[in-house]
Length: 145
Ligand code: HEC
Ligand code: HEC
Image (cartoon, rainbow, N blue to C red; front, top):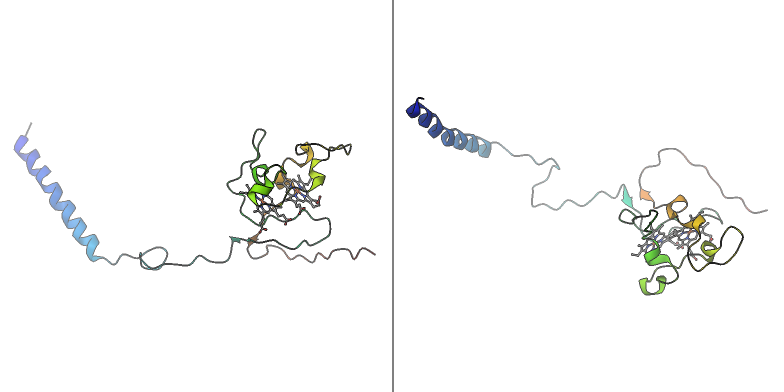
C-alpha cells in the first residue's frame, strides 16, 4: 500500500471542501419563494379554508362545514366530529349540536347515539375552500311554489 500518497490525497479533501464552500458563499442565493429568508410572506387567500358559517344554498342542504376537517378521523371505531357535535359534548365544546334528525333510525325511532345512517358526516357535510370554480354553476334553488 502506498501510505504517504493516501494521506496526501486525504489532506486535500478539506481544501477542496473549503474552496467549494467559498464559491457557494460568493454566489447569490435565491430563495424559491422569491423573498428574503427573514421577510414574512402572507399566505395567498386563494385555496384557504372558508371559516365562519356559510349560508345554505337551498332549504334542505346539509350545512357546509365552517372549519377545517383535516385532522378529524372518521372510521369504524372513531368519529372525532362527535367529540364536539354529539349532544353529550356540544355544550362544553361550544359547538352546534347535531340536528335531532341525526338520532333517528330508518324507522323513525329516537336513539341516544348517532344513527348509523348519519355516522359518516362527510358524505353530506363538506368544508369549502376559497378557490376559483372549476366549472360554472348556475344552480338556483326552487322557489317552493
Ligand atoms: C373541536 C371541536 C369540533 C370538531 C372536532 C368538529 N367541529 Fe364542526 N363545528 C365546531 C364549532 C365550534 C362550530 C361552529 C363554528 C361557527 O359557528 O363558526 C362547528 C360547525 C360545524 C358545522 C356547521 C353547522 C351549521 O349549522 O352551520 C358543521 C356542518 C360541522 N361543524 C361539521 C363537522 C364535521 C363533519 C366534523 C368532523 C369531520 C366536525 N364538525 C368536527 C366544532 C367542531
Ligand atoms: C345523510 C346526510 C348527513 C349525514 C351523514 C350527516 N348529516 Fe348533519 N345534517 C344533514 C342535513 C340535511 C342537515 C340539515 C337538516 C337537518 O337539520 O336535519 C344537517 C344538520 C347538521 C348540523 C346543524 C344542526 C343545527 O341545528 O344547526 C350539524 C352540526 C351536523 N349536521 C353535523 C353532522 C355531523 C357531525 C355528522 C356526522 C356525525 C353529520 N352531521 C352527518 C345531513 C347529514
